[in-house]
Structure formats: structure tokens, C-alpha cells
Length: 412
Image (cartoon, rainbow, N blue to C red; front, side, top):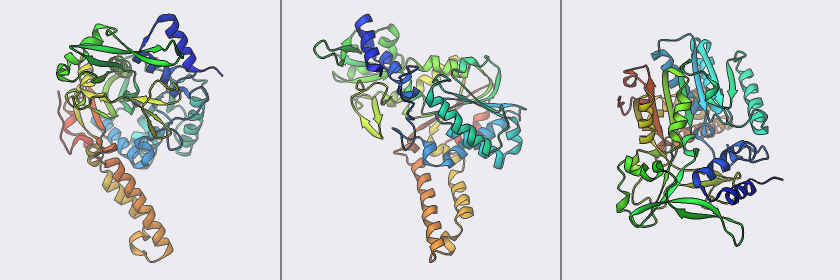
């Protein structure tokens, strides 16, 4: 079977060492053999049986909370007759399913306006993409979602610029966009390239001059005092964030951009004590510290510079509404109260009949649900993720968004 590592090696031998950003783009997004295309086998990388899980895997109440926020955004936009949700990096469609479930059960007027577009970079005939589409189609049919109200595309550029009113939502997507890696050497920054070891043919790192002025000046643009760091200090630079944000939000005439991921503002992300940067690999729910091994078979990720997204957004006409933690965001949307309501409805014997078999079963189910919510709110885990909200054409909305209520908003 064709191996992605062989293709990468051939390109290096032909064109010379490649930047880590190029390597990461091939490892994750090669159309046939990349990790997010199924690694050449159609294997699903997400979920408990894959390599990592997301907030939506922990409990459907996460999706309920995001849906509640999207519903309020529809209200703030004046209840348009059509409200489009575009989800880049939609994965298995977990969030789409929960959004439609919320609309059906709690917001029937919004359901009539709702349209959902899932963006998956895998080609339409890719086995992984086909399997995802089949599963979601069955889920949406069970929810009586009208035909044509949800669709899959491979690129947000397939949508006409300025054609939509609604929201662009991404969850744990930006962290997987390719990054350049730099290392401090003396008074300069060197860039990490991927080369081929002539002795054994393995992929190895090589340091050389930055590949572009944008790489060389990135940290300075955010006023990062990298000069005071010790030799060997590393950082990841995600130049791809700007083009991604431009393409993802170009269809949005009016509405909101909701970005959920792990990371921080630049001044908190690029610190001297984070000597080795944040680049990591994941396989079978285990950390992998050798990112050059088995390209296409492991996830690669690095923390998100949210300052860059805010500044790039401003140049694209997006205004900052707020930046908060996922824990605060979910609390503001009432996830704890909804958890109590759901447990009281589904597991009534948990408190009234604890001495019975039914009461014991309900009690265990209740504790499991409340434990899942606690996991989502854990500030040292998923609750510490950042939630960035930006808007286009909806001035003043930040002061009313439920998800930003606990910490307020910072409109710019």
C-alpha cells in the first residue's frame, strides 16, 4: 500500500527540506493518505474508538449549550427567515445533530429558519467522509430534519461571498492548522525544517534560516520578548490562521463567528517557561512526542494564538465580541441548570427511591451525567479551552450574549 511517508520523502529528495508547516499539511490533509482523510484506510480518528475525543463526545449537553447560543444569535439578528450555520471541520456531525435536536424540541420557529452546512476537507468519495455522511443522514432523518436543510461541502469557498446570515462555528479545528516551528539560536531565530537522513532514510529535523519574512517577524509583531529566552526555546507560528479565517467567514454577510479551541492570547502563549512550545501528537488517546513518525497515522496539534485571530478578524471586518473560557461560556448558557432539569426528568428515582434497584440505577445515571458536565467545566481540562466570539454587522450584541454573561464582553 502507498505510504504517505514515502511521498514526503520523495518530495524532500526532489525539492529539498520542507518547512514543518508543509509536513504538517501533508500529514493531516493529504487528500488520500492524510490523517483527516482517514489515513488511507478510512479510519475514523475522532471519538472514544479513535485517537482523541472532543467536548461533544463527553455529553450531548455540550451541543445543547452551543445550540442555545446559536438560537439566541438568531434572535439578536432579528429572526431572519433563513439562518445558516456553517461548521468548518465538522467531523462526524455531532454538533449538527445536537443543534437540530435542540431546534426540534425547544425552538420550532428557529427550526424553520435553520440551515446547516458541514465542511469536511476530505473528498466527497473518500470512505471516511461517506461513512460520516451516512451516519449523520440517519440521525437527522430520525429528527425529521427537512430534506435539503443540511449539506456537506469540501471548502467554504464553495459558498458565495456575503451570501449568508447566521454563524460560523468551529470546535478544535484551528489547533490542527499547519504551523511553522522556530527555535532561538543565539540572537536569531532559526526555522525547523524536515529533511531526510542520508544514512538511514528517516525523516529528521534540520535548522536553517526562516523560510519567509512573515516567519522571521511573527513573534515581534506580537511583542513577544523571545530574545530573553534561552537557546533552544521553541514556538509554533500559525500563518495559516489568517487565510483560514478569511475563507471561512467570507460567506457571512451578517452574523457571528464562534471559535472554540485550546490556546491563549499571544502574551500568555509565548512565554519563556514554555520552552518546548506546544506541538504534540495524539494516537489512541496517548501523547506522542515524535511528530515526524508515522505521518497520516497520528494527530498533530499546537495551541492557538487567539490574539492573531482577533487581529486577523479585525482586518476582515470582524469585531471582537468576547474571549472567555469554555467553562464560563457553558455556565452562562445554563448547562448546570439544564443538567439538573434533565436528571430530574430522566432519573426521578435517583433521590426518591434510592433503596430500590431502580433508584440505584437512576442514581448512577444521574451521577454519570453530572460528572460529564463537571468534565466540561473543569478549568484544567476542557473548561480551560478558549471561546472567541466575533461579529459582523451586529454591533452591541456582545452585551447580550448568554455565553459571555458571566465575564462580560469586550466589544472592539
